[in-house]
Length: 406
Image 1: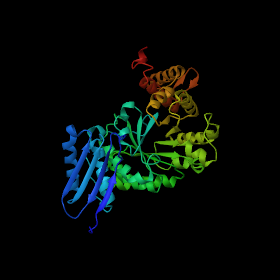
Image 2: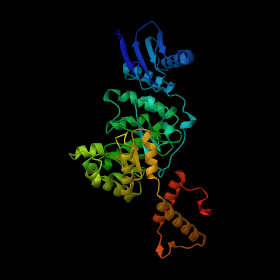
Image 3: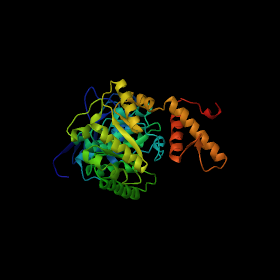
Image 4: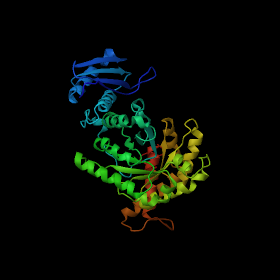
């Protein structure tokens, strides 16, 4: 280091901040480590915060520095992320990572055909939204590195999302991350692949090549870090070109589990605006549904942006369901319950599904190769769809577990 002082900082500051912290570093050539901590929870956690900062200073071989921490109730994973960000902004050549112990509550897997009715977006640089997000019981939780993060905070969000994947209890929700648009998004992968991400959302996808680039990079990182669990992809179609190439994108990787559409960027790309009626996006949404169904993955609808209009959201979900979509994005926790209720099967659907499943099970008992209800033959895809309807009805408590006996 030369004789001049190096200064850096990370994290927000101010009276309105909560569950976060501000870290300021001033690297010097002498004087040792001097830590100035200001914390709203000093009496309860001051000692543990100091220990964390000093442990990290030793880990990164900081010997002479003035460290200022303004804590607004941040959890350890946030404090660690902010300190590491400040340190790496001061010393960008540093490659070491300070990894907190992986929480047992974060160590669960997913499956390719898992239910994905709702996915709740959480801004990747706003830890206040992470803490209780899993309590809202969305099927998936998305830590977002793309649109919700300003360009100057991308590196801070990478470390915060990495730490959140290791530390936050998502209460069994599928652990998703939306990376940045390629090629920037390829750099995001090393911060999420080793930390039990379940699904990677690939934004503004316009070709199979983009999916394959993500797949190749994920394979490299998995091999290097000895990651064994499956990681799935959800490309997001957000442009006219993406719509035209929807099938190519959907079939680009065996690890694709779903194909989603984002209508804010799509409507801008075709030179129009979104409307409640949705006529301007009917073609695009139908293309996405057909492409996804053609390769056997889930079609997922866009977000509904008016978080105060629950009736509008419900209508939007009904429309999405009628087009063949299986899920919808959520940008506010209050939307999750409405989405789940609207995707729930109706009484006629449930009744029909029960008859199909019972007929199938009866045919299996008799070792019959053909399943029929009356004079109508029942194909395997119909049985599979009926079983899915039954599962949805059970999840929504519309029928009891012993429905066969009723």
